[in-house]
Length: 143
Image (cartoon, rainbow, N blue to C red; front, side, top):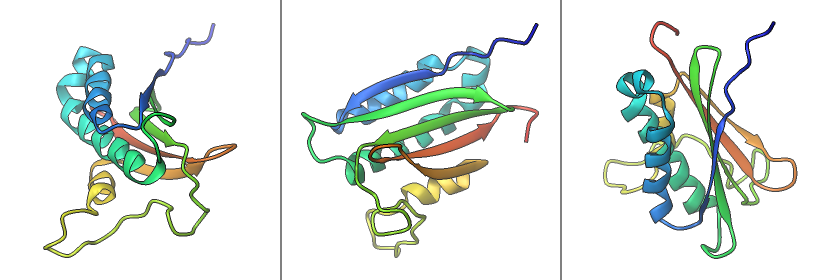
């Protein structure tokens, strides 16, 4: 009989700055204790950066739009996907990409952190509208 996989954890948060800490807390609480011990701070940082970017660049109104967060283990990694409803043209302006801001810049380092922390990450268009940014961290002993 095949091993039954875990059901991914899934949340929806309003397009409001308070959702960043709520998302980070939700992910931390959803992780098994042994995973939280060695991945907790990194996965919380990934979540914060991805949710912040989704709120900043992919939503318009805190009252109407939601940011979705999914967390799941697969193939020796824990994966985080953050989706927003924004209209990001493929390969065009508004598509998330690593930036290299100047030393005096106060913004623009989120995906640089994601790129350094994650074993792999990507941007995928959603079927109707918006994008998902997906990042994975390896579990201990995987790599």
